[in-house]
Length: 296
Figure 1: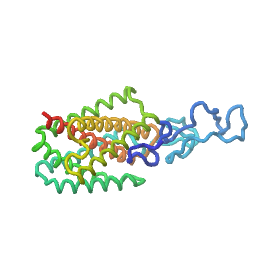
Figure 2: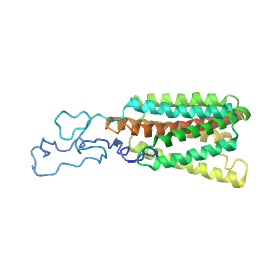
Figure 3: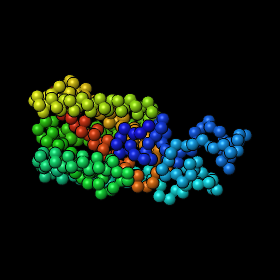
Figure 4: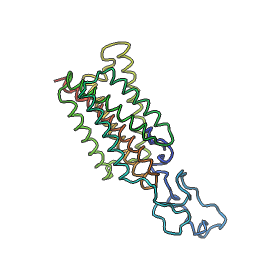
């Protein structure tokens, strides 16, 4: 099953029933394979069961940690590691923070910030549909997204809810740490059912958001009320929860990529996906805090 995150919905980061396709070995329970590729005690000319397609594997039965001499055993050179993902994510998030600081200090106009946000969205879409990561696109997206977030946060902090930006940052960090703990302790398990339900919920959420926006543009006011009052609070909480669940999905994709030998360049895509999810959580958190403080 392909990931619902557009960044990870690409070759190598696809899964079937919650398992990644990197260097995937024959599934457990199948016939044992001998050194010549024939099932023990079976037809010596029978073909071995096909493993899930791995675009990076040199041998369909190669798996991480294979013993020396195993046909097609992969080398570890150029493979993605957790250090790679952490360093790339730190770079992209650092650019987001730097851009936000520039927009905040210079009191950037909302018109310019919205323009930067739209360009960032286009760059994100371009990168999402490319088969290989382009660091320049990812870094440009991070910088422009930072400008947008900084200007929006400054506006909300000044005219809607004082201190909302810092509260949103702390809330986003809390969501990240909480979901990481829940994922590592396997309280939250990412499998095919999890992805299916998350996709349904996310599509429904985005559809309602789009409809509400259309009513706001053409009908004026608060549209259908999904972004204000009690409904706005409920909708904001749902948005934060969806972002948290997408974080779990991102963690799974990164874990699978490392375990099954993704190329090192894929760490840029992992950082890109994590950054996009954290930006989503921050925006939903900022909106939720603004609504809560506005009701006081």
